[in-house]
Length: 424
Figure 1 (cartoon, one colour):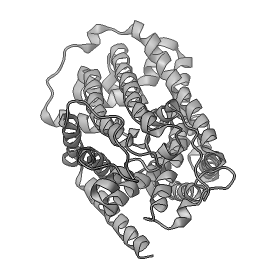
Figure 2 (figure 1 turned 60 degrees about the horizontal axis):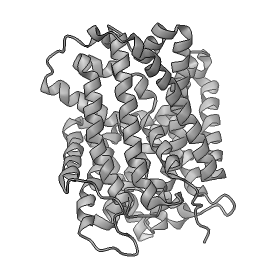
Figure 3 (figure 1 turned 90 degrees about the vertical axis):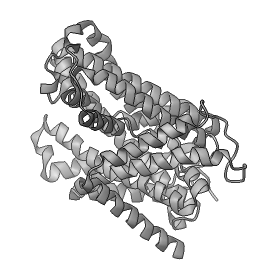
Figure 4 (figure 1 turned 120 degrees about the vertical axis):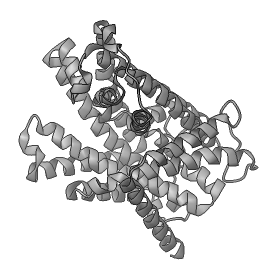
């Protein structure tokens, strides 16, 4: 049987993780957070970044035990059985596809600012269809090519942020950080939930372990480095945006406004380009990772073998790629993603909680053909996995009734799909 090609290094995996976390939201988030907690915003970014690191360390530990494609699907499957593993991977695929559909529509709207017809009709359809087709073809052509495109788009989104931070730090006015307002429990909870979602996406880092050259060592490195880079960039971005915009809570485009303040019109354009690179990179990564979730389930006989077909020349999971892109395109053009986006809250809860708890469960299990020894162990014993589990539960308490209902429906649909696949 044709196998996937192992060509990815630790920095490739890191770029894939950063690419999925830092999306277009970072260009808006500093103002969203400031409206909730005022000048406490940068500290909120830092604290939630550290809490997210606890979850990422759990991903790193369980990731060091596996050298196959699948990410959180594999530890959940070994620790809690096939059904739980399937639901974890199903929710991973589902949220990646719906976010891909949502983001490509956002890109069309962003570009419509420069050419209005892109917002609707045939120009919108051609843009969405054309971009999805190009990214799909790159994904089919090889994981190294896909990784190269992700690397370039990641650099394309990080460069404007780096320019904004390095130049903007000289314009920061300390007076903008005072007075520090009192924050209610409700404001804190809402901010924490918003930022937990903003830091999400790193869970995809280990999905491509089956295409990594040294997965059991490089996957843990990539998880830790992804969160370290992301937390640093997001916190510094918030510091600069808050420090140079006295009325940051009143703007809808804080980074564009801040860049225009220090660099003029060219700065605003630079931020717009960075946002466009972010959205394109997100979709490239979404196809790359979601298709591997399908492939992993099929490889382990939890879905029909059709999804596990590997292209004989390019050694990529071609059927899984085409199916993933086709579903995302259908959702993007129909607008159905708007109703399905609410699933992401429960999806994050399921994925994070499964990995946090499996970190503890797998410590007491012997190695096997499926699972090797942990080459990386989180420090402080059970403390970090317990904190990670509590943070995961926090998503449940912050979710709306609509999100809970949508998530429950998605889990039920996954259960039906699992039953059909097993019966077949």
